[in-house]
Length: 154
Image (cartoon, rainbow, N blue to C red; front, side, top):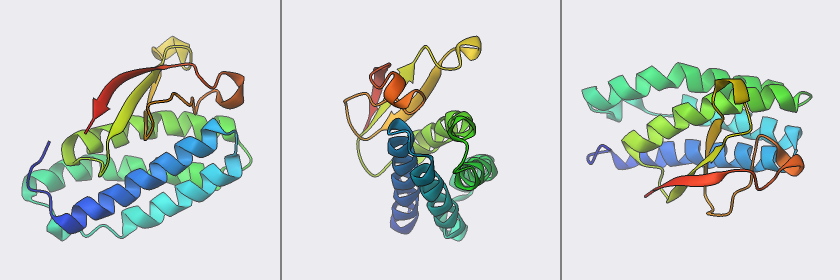
């Protein structure tokens, strides 16, 4: 984790994490429209990050993740009629957000959750949550509690 993150960068990245949490909660509640709203808000937040405030090393890490994160936010934002598609992109988005949070912090304690049932052929799925209580975004109301807390990121 970087110790010297500019306060404006930290605030911008916290906003991205907040939109990620918004998407996660919408998917956990089987609400594709709300997930799409979160995806669009994340896209906007990503566009507003001032990359000139990163150190060279931080920028390298961020740049590795930015395009992928934008792509997943865009897909989630455009597919309010296809929650399965949104969940597929959320799976990939979660891995990118996890990398960013591990590098830059999330602006709040976050729980790294894992569900072994989703995406079985590829080894399950992880996500980040703001609460210790598991609310599965991949199965929603079908299996809301499926998953375990693997790690607490402070």
